[in-house]
Length: 332
Ligand SMILES: [Zn+2]
Image (cartoon, rainbow, N blue to C red; front, side):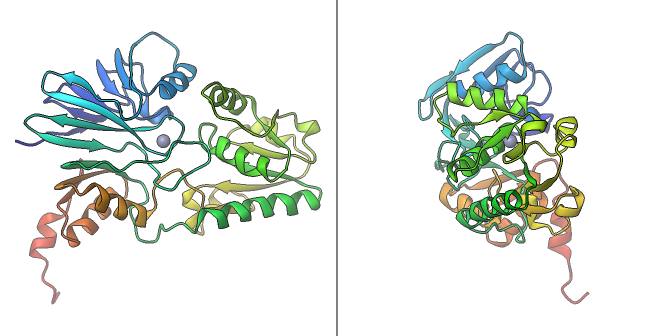
């Protein structure tokens, strides 16, 4: 017997009756982390205490919360045990390991980042028979430069912009990226302003035990001499009131040269909270699964890469082009 996995709005495991990161309200779902595409108003959830805290802030309402500390195993059903392991993506983000008496060990990564960051727990790579992994950056061209280099470049961009008497604006999501950027820029001794939603999330991180350099709520008329960290496409009205500004998007997509133009910004820095291509491969090697299922991003392409390397791998919910590979005539 083996695990059955259905891709709907999120993943459904019919053999145990639980969802993984359902994006619409369901009866029972594991929630890997509190980003909005991974949460919904479920009746019952399993997650870390940090994810539950951040989720309450984004999605008010009542639900049954099973809070599991990392590495603590509990019985989920009579046949299946559950353990959460850190995913390194944002604070509290978890992978779920399900150990079933008949179907074996299934690891679902959720969004994950193997490199250690400044605002999340270090990512683990537990052994599993079946690995369900996100593959946002599953193409060989997505290999990020060393994080120290990218962080130094971000700080240099901010300093140069301030020297030129303009306001540097770093574009990164409110939950996760803003807190990492605050650590980087604040530790470099530069004063930071955040829009109110990012301030509220940063305060939640502080309540959860993280410490940050000081920061202020964004006031455009007093922003001169500060670094502003704001979400891409957000904070529009506030940002529009900054006198002179230079913007930089901070994202793994910065590897694509078009990113600067797409975001109409002055620079782009490839600091991501996801695994890059080489990290995806190394993760599979560490988990040593018998079978891999890929979701998100370049899922089909990465599954194909794994198959070529001798690992059984399939993109969930996609045409895997198996027939094409088997029948392709190399002479044509
Ligand atoms: Zn995420």
